[in-house]
Length: 169
Image (tube, rainbow, N blue to C red; front, side):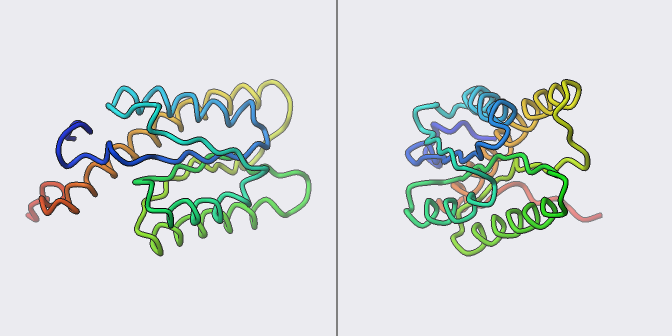
């Protein structure tokens, strides 16, 4: 991957990080690790705008409006959609993920999801600790995906192609 300070870099544009505030103490771990990891990849924290919304359901509209500004080369979404005892979480999670995909296809601004829907989540310490740690990993993963993708898209826009094409055997 080319360093973001190169001439094909998106470094002059910004990244938006949107997070839901439900289970904030857990979802914050994604934001913290994302910020640390993307800095290691050459993107300054000062180039990231942070947005906090009530829940995951509100993320897609916010992502679309941010993408339409032309200010962002990438948008990251983070949230935790849990089963609150009624069969609603599956619908919310599906709506959020589908809508985020539609945002990136409609606006041509890549959207990265760290919106997770655990199969089982309970408020006791064991689950809290597991997801606290899991969101650290997810933050690192989404930072690498974001940095790699926006750098490759910048190369395409600069007319330099994307990545080496794999040779078919």
